[in-house]
Image (tube, rainbow, N blue to C red; front, side):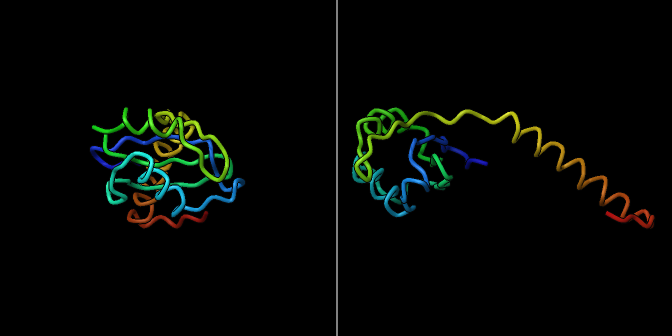
Length: 112
């Protein structure tokens, strides 16, 4: 889930590229000229990375980072698209939790 005022971006660089959070943070900050403190959460997956930047500087970050090279690889950066699977999962999970709490407090013996 993204923070208010932040935009989540997608980068074509991940764990398989042996990249670490500090490297990505340093690359974004040095390439764009923004403070590392302005960069939000960084989630490194196997083949890609998500990171957050303030919404007012998204276009600058996209322009600069699409020309950047990290660990010898040219990276592509774009706005992250919302996942249909994630939204379905989170909706289902909240219904499950509500149902479980209701059963728990109703005194019914429930086994999972």
